[in-house]
Image 1: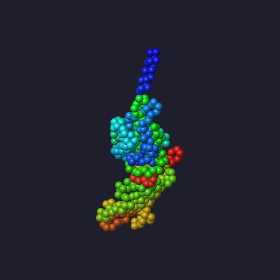
Image 2: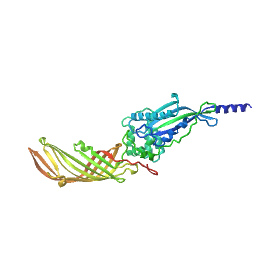
Image 3: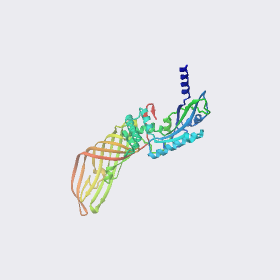
Image 4: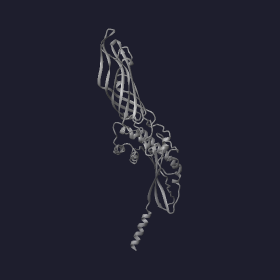
Length: 421
């Protein structure tokens, strides 16, 4: 009898205990925006169903009492830390305002939290998506970054976001921008309930709403205003200038067009015509080159005009350099580029490194053959006296570039299983 009494007391104690339950819903925002729009993802259904969370209802002898509400705002990692912190604060505030429309809750029950750049959320999404390019490399990068933030270590040098942009030639960033980042631009409403017996005077029964992620196809069809950073662009066309020529006071411009999955054609032009007759200084050169390149980067991840490449090139140019009265003219004096130019042709190798969403640094070295004639002369009084004409037959480096490349065009989303997003 005594044993039965003890068991009965234990059952009563267990039944009397409050069991906690946590539920959550999420709404999504456009890039760089804190305005709640009903046509994005599942927002309309979530907001319309909020009243069901705060209706006082009963179910048999069971009640759920709401005792805590928290709204967490987040953002994708583009833009500065300060910008994303303010943006996620606004997103949290606007969802809490929606809660206040459906329920009058004491201040002690409500709170908001801003996490800014949601690195942990991005890490979770990367782990779940097997199609992320260089998945393990991205995971290692994010884990190290989150560990540093947990230890309150401020990374030195380049902003971690730009390190992510440049990681693995930028291919993971371009994939994540379209497929994962929209899921980070969100506010999440968390609600905690106590599960108690019917002796409670007021109770709330939570109604579960499916916390579906937004349809990424629908998101892709919505214009994404660029506030945090410019959106990625399709790397089909690029303008560029060779910094080595710029340092030598030779203005130049280049154009490169991607053709198909791996090929591109490129053309460059330079023109400088500086002179100072009084001191016999001449710095005159003009001409250009054309070429064709093969890019090794995978087209599946939108890496056109980025990464390793090899190619063939041809050059035509003429020049007139004179220093301290000694000069040399490439080609025949007083003739044009097409009459008697110097020329070169060869093989090149290069690597184009992304340094920003629209900018690359392209490093190129070319080896080939250079030919043509050149004339040596002396500046005597007001005359320039010809000395000798020579033929040039040179085999070796004939091309060098450290070019700043501005990529133009419109980006296409990466390809996943089942088609384009």
